[in-house]
Length: 304
Image (cartoon, rainbow, N blue to C red; front, top):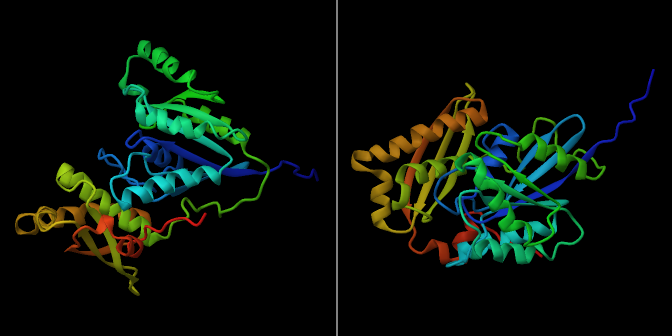
């Protein structure tokens, strides 16, 4: 009987970039299931989300970082520190930019920090190529290629899947020989309660649009399974001002009901169980600038 001598490769890849360049969309496409919430509101991702891609030959743990931006409060500080600290823990870095946006000061800010990485590959990933004409792509690549010595440049569409297989194949070859860190069927390292809270927050962002941009957090109060398999979830939506509470609840509770209805569908898909979801809305003025409240909501600074 011939012995299988094939080695297993595993490693960690950080996805960095300005807010709203499609990092979460990319992660969800690769993993094949929603592990990071998506919204057209910038700075949607607040914590480092780990998505796990596993095959018979390799396991790549992707870290979807918050968008790097100029912080205006303690929550913003947390997000930027979270993104930058991820660069210390990985085997490769993907710097993602938008094909339909010109290179700007935010990109240059990140590039200056990426230049300090000399011992690991750094890939330039130009996302949203489905939004530009093919003739526009080369000038976009040219505007970035002299900024630093990229390991390789990949134009992709995270929404449509263009060139993603090629990118994954290249990343796989860069991963060192190593163990399988997570079981085959595990797609994220975050506990279910965290993902559930994120799915609820996503619906708030999507349905209230610009009216409640970054002033919302979601806390799971209880999450219990009954004997019949029904999962009871009670969650509180935290907002910054009383006016936002009215927006989230809506006339006659209509908005809150719609948020709950849409979130329940995604949560049932995540858990594979029927879900009974109860939502409340609470005002906590200035919570994004209060360290104690941020920590109680799960935004804890990394230990360096």
